[in-house]
Image (cartoon, rainbow, N blue to C red; front, side, top):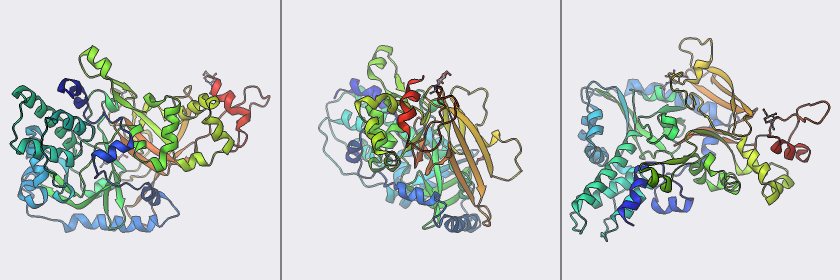
Length: 488
Ligand SMILES: *[C@@H]1O[C@H](CO)[C@@H](O)[C@H](O)[C@H]1NC(C)=O
Ligand SMILES: *[C@@H]1O[C@H](CO)[C@@H](O)[C@H](O)[C@H]1NC(C)=O
């Protein structure tokens, strides 16, 4: 592969992820193990969640008092350097990026840094070079984990191998490499200083990574924060546990994390990561050619023409993704119909009904695409007129347009206190009365929420005299589905 052909791809920092599952598996054997069942258990009201919540809340409230250190005059950068046993690998990467170092070492700053520990970053396999640098860089752009970045750094820049590439090429590669490292590091940072218990009060938080080239409508990528139960701690993006929190620095807090964070892929790629959960959804999207509605992808042809990176697809969306079991709950004949050549239009309509093309909805954050001027903070709680001071609970109802004929979904976010546990909050997200089993999964181009049922449209028979809403489940789908899907 020639450098010229891959360069634009590399500029696509975290975007170029049009990779099927097998590729992911191959290029990194350390993709964190994410268990959807685990997320679901935590949110399932009938589980021992409330008890566990209280344990986690107790632990969190104990954290701040316990962890007083004498080092709070040192900056985050200085503290990381001081603890080489734990952080030498990440500090090595940080030193490559002067800007990152500057931010972490700025005594006047107020930030948070999730520091991946050495033990979570495997030592690289040293390998011989066969002039394949461009290709390894391309792989890196597609899979920019700290592990792979660290391995690439050690293999390429620390081993003094000779090759015949000219200096210009080398310099360019290094630039690209540094760009990717910089972006990934930003995903480990927050632009404000937050303790573990402050973090735990919300389900997601905005990171310092604002993706380039229009992804996420220019909004920072978010990080999922969750109280983990055994052992009590915080878990980030469902896989990286905070092993030591609230390490106080002059310019904020370090939270030590077991695994480096991976900036999220786009909505469709996120679904591809869990074939056992979402293969019906992903193959349905492919069947109707709907990838562009949920992907944000680099387009080489257009970029070559325009001479700058051009992306296609959906820059910022919310997808409500029904699980395989959810599709399994539909009448058998309906599933056969939807996946038959005759059902394509209905399948497309049903899928479109699950996608919000112009809103990024998290349980705490709502961004309407293109509304940068009007909205300052985007807190969904701002929609609530009267809120009590210091009360983090709220109930918000919004109707947001889907991709199908602008029909709206009725969305309710309910954050309430778990009585009688002080400080514990439970979140419930419902869409047309269906409760999401997992919510707030961050994506490069928006948000994903998991549904245990396929959403049934609210539909009035225009031809029936009564014009009543079609009630009940999907049993009588033959009476209305085709008509509904075609009435656009
Ligand atoms: C949590 O969300 C609320 C809005 O519901 C916001 O005011 C607060 O700043 C958020 N906290 C963090 C740590 O992001
Ligand atoms: C699609 O939109 C048109 C115009 O608003 C409306 O008349 C029609 O009923 C809609 N169809 C469905 C299925 O909602």
